Every structure is written in C-alpha cells, then in structure tokens.
Image (cartoon, rainbow over all chains, first blue to last red; front, side, top):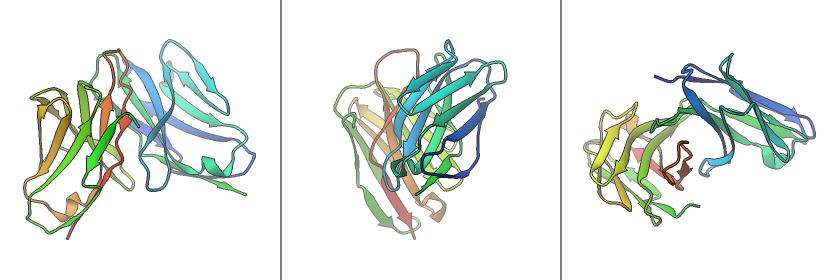
Length: 112
Length: 114
C-alpha cells in the first residue's frame, strides 16, 4: 500500500522568510495530494491540494509542487507570518482509492 | 466546518470500560472516516464507511469497531478501553462522488484512558 514520508519533522524560520516542507510517496498510481494545516488544539484544515495532471499550484503565499517522476511533492510558504505557525500534514491518494495516507507532520514555527 | 460534529469532545474513562464516540454530519455525505492522532504518528485511519452498513478497516483497527445505521451518524466503539487508546480521535467526511479523496475533519474528541 501507499506510504508517505514527510520531512522535516520540525522547522523554524524567521518571519518574512520562506518555508519548504517535502513529502515522498511510494505508489506511482497516486494522483491526489492535499496539504492540511493544524493549529494547536484545532482540527486539520485543508489548505491546498494538487492533482497529478499539474506540476504546480499557487494560492496567495502558499504553493505546492509535484514531481511525479521522483514521486515527491512539496509545500512552499513565502513571506511567512506568525499565524503560519502550525503543524502541516501532507497526504496522498490514488484514483478510486477510498483512503488518504498521511505523512507524519511538520511543526512549523515562525520566529518574530 | 462542513457540518460535522463529534461527541463527546472530551472523555476520561478507565481501563476495561466500553466507550462510544459519535460523529454526526448534516449533509448526507456517503463517506465517513475515523482517525486517531498521536504525537509522531500523524493521522492514522481506524475505520471508514462508504454507506449505511458498509464499513471497512483502516491501518489501526484492532480494538475498535464501528457502526453506521444512518447516513448522518458514524459510531466508533472501544469495546474494552486500554491506555494505548488514549488519543485524539477525528472524524472526517468526503463530499461528493468525485475522483479525488478530499476530506474535511470534525473538531475531534480527546479520550484519556486511565
């Protein structure tokens, strides 16, 4: 079955700098890759996703890139702000699959 | 918040007691999921449902059972709770019939087994 690895487990950046979180997946049939943000004590919230027919997707300060050949995808946050501090999870799913497989999470801290 | 509620939101119980957690949705989504979240393990799937009375196991199903007798409710039962089942439990729904597995989460239940 699918296996998703996420790195780094913790990341600390200065406010205004960029942050990058990377995930690799094992199932070449995977075609859907969402990212979730979870603030302390809250539920995971879907913030952006990408499908395998595109290589990059942007939404304001966040972007996700996908490299199908290498089977990895990344979350990029530019001009980081204190409210970006949270745990971020990547996930993968193949077409027709009923399950999402999640990475282990990255705790992002934005230092003022 | 996708019309998902979970109850109770917090529970403390003792080893060996049965516990049932409820997930309720208001929008007649076909797919519902139960996850547990533990430090260092991310979100792990316990069980999921693809319709009334249709359920299947996830990666960490041992010690848990589920039932779905109505579209809107998905129940997770710990028949005899153990300390290893202390965790935060999230329910999720998957809207629509599309090809992608887009899921939205409920607010979570924090369960402590003493």
